[in-house]
Image: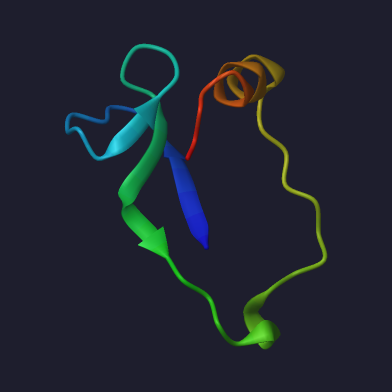
Length: 58
């Protein structure tokens, strides 16, 4: 599953971090074909990571 970290989120289908930033569930994508899954690391800002890691995501 892929979730985008976006700015200017103005709806309730998200997990907010700062201001109107956060994970946007309206843009979620389920990837089934492993050909589209990369081994590369993804980097987000430390502050954003810390804020998301404190939230109960389930």
